[in-house]
Length: 332
Image (cartoon, rainbow, N blue to C red):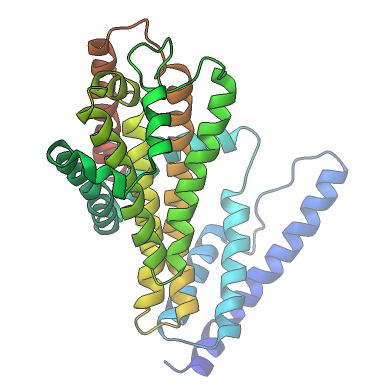
């Protein structure tokens, strides 16, 4: 269907919906000034149905590559309708956030499983490879990490430390803030650099995998494996999986730039950004939880390593179970 015919057929519906939105916004402002709850619908418009039709028309306009002006108009109408129907209401924001984390985010991870699996391979592959290589070729570590940094890691994970992974002068709350900053920095770098045709995401996934694997392999090889693994076991599931998910979001952006298909790169990137940003919402929550565990549980030496390993195994089971099973009942 030509654009002119499309606009002639459905334009009156868009105009009615837009006029209704304008009237509703004016009524809401008057109601807010009067401290009254505004009415939610007018008799002349079926709002949910009108909103669904606008969304359908927006999808058709994008698919048929109609003019940017028409696509932008329909997109604005869809956004205004979405805000009206699903906008924030008192008490709803927190509930929707929890619902997203419990069900929506795991479903999204499974929907984007191709990118998640690719990112996991790029990240966890170097981790496991370096751990294995350094057990047979320990001197290889000096090609990767400066000796002064290695001395710092030895100090942090010395079996005689009162608190693992920290100096005695370090404060748990201060370290909590540091871990949040560090985790967010890693996640954002891995995600945002996907705009560079995905190359930045590829680099940071492999680079972080190599660095983490190198430190783990080195400390294990010199006999510091017990303090190191007992420290990282509790928070590793949340933190490492969040890095992989950040990488998946970056690869999603990179794929849109490299292979936009019949759409323009801008349109493809806009479409890819929606799931990518929502993946980052979930990854940010995981980074926050990981930082809390790392600051307040991981350094403790009051518990035997076996207990901390058990907690770590439970965390891995919880994270994997959540991402694999979360939201399935509701999705069905």
